[in-house]
Image (spheres, rainbow, N blue to C red):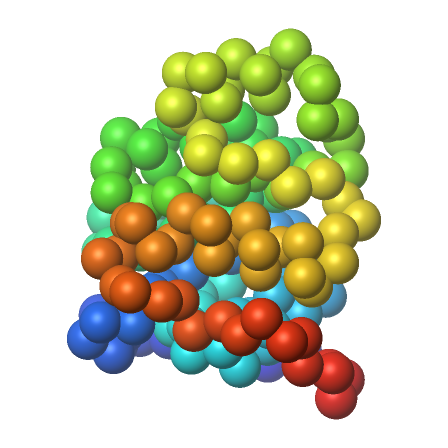
Length: 154
């Protein structure tokens, strides 16, 4: 599977950038394809260590984190992401946690994460989650998202 990471600092000026952190290559590929088709600059990594290295190199407007990575807990990584990327909107994606989980409620209340997206999710659900936060975080009038869903060709 191809590596969807771009070189550090390659984001186009004014376009939102997303770091996807998931240890499932298929999830990384699907999210990279979905968001890049909407104009986002997308980097993907499959470990917490890789994410921390990228946080030190470049900024992101959004971070999508899997809750259970092989090398790190997603909530612990979210805390570090918020310290290193204070302006980024951080979303936790999980098949492990549920929406009413006390850990998720605490992370939301403490502003460790801005949103929780349970797996499985639809393209519309994840785009809507990012779109709702993205407009304020990057100072754009509109995020590259349309009200009419595109039919995926993949």
